[in-house]
Length: 233
Length: 245
Image (cartoon, rainbow over all chains, first blue to last red; front, side):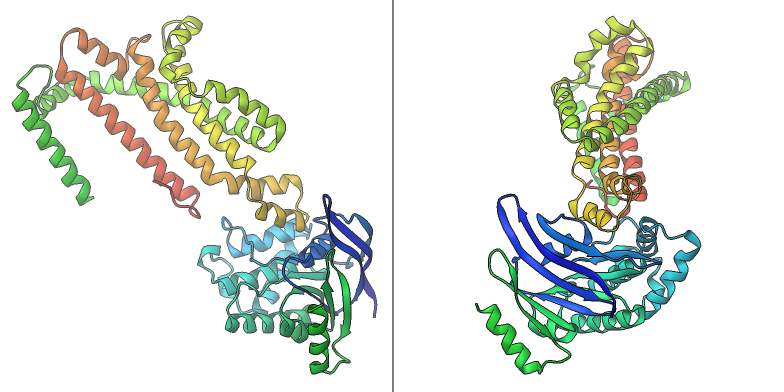
């Protein structure tokens, strides 16, 4: 499989505070990599580095851009849709920013909105959406740009268990529909096992990768024990 | 609506009773004022002076709104440079518009120009401060989305910064309008030859107390009307954030 993102010996510090130390991993096309670790350890910082919102203190990040799309697009913990726009205008914002030609906008939006069952909400105001609907729109907003890698920063954390399961299913549908690679951050072991093809466990201060498990090959029970042991370190 | 009608009726009744008890020419009753209002409308003086005041507000407020929004946006976006600019203006802001009247007359002479200047000052500062604050404090969560989606600085301004600031801009324009109206009356008390402020002054010289009160009531009604209209516009233009009033 073609490698589309490579994180090579990346370290990061907020001023004097070292947050990440020597982080290395790669993501191949269509793969889902989950970064798992305790809250506040620096998992979201890795996504911000991958999305270009932050620059690493040392090390290298190489993102291969899809031919018809962009490198990475991020879905935040909260949907972060613009409340002054309708759903459609929020999606147009992402397409305009990605410099997608205007005639293509609706062609890109409609199939994805159909996948998440929100076609009827295209002209709705953001305030009229439930949190689950808003997060699905946020997912579509990132995917209309056709990124090589979708970055998910604990996108289910604001949801109750029922909506969380629903959104996980929608995510799976969208990922298999678009064939996009995924890097997701979570502190929930079950979520990591459900979604990830590979789970990277982060721990320590500054945080580093303490364990790397390929879920496709692993016995789930064993994988869970292994992760728990590394999180307790 | 019913609450307002009841409150107004009670206020009128209290005014009437107080006037009857006071029994003084300097405290006219509502009915005497109504008669004075009918006379002022019949001879056209009320309409003429009201239009003169409204025109002055229109000119001064238009300039204040244009400059206030433009300079406020610039100051909010420019970071430290903008902060320095705001520091200077913060020193001028607490000076009440009426304190500018003598210097306005010195600079612009007696007439409309000095009144426009005072109206401009009254409206400019609240608009400028509110707009600068709105642009300087654009929510980071929105800006982070714009950066993560690689939005250009121009698109980020048009689609993110401007609409995010819109509720505060509308609020500043609304407050500015109210202050423009009160400033024009202050400016007209000296320095011009017509307008509701000047009319009050002229009627004071001839002891027409009913006429004075009529002008004051018109000032109050028009001020209320402006605020109400500005609220409606604010709710329509920025429906995602309801007016705070």
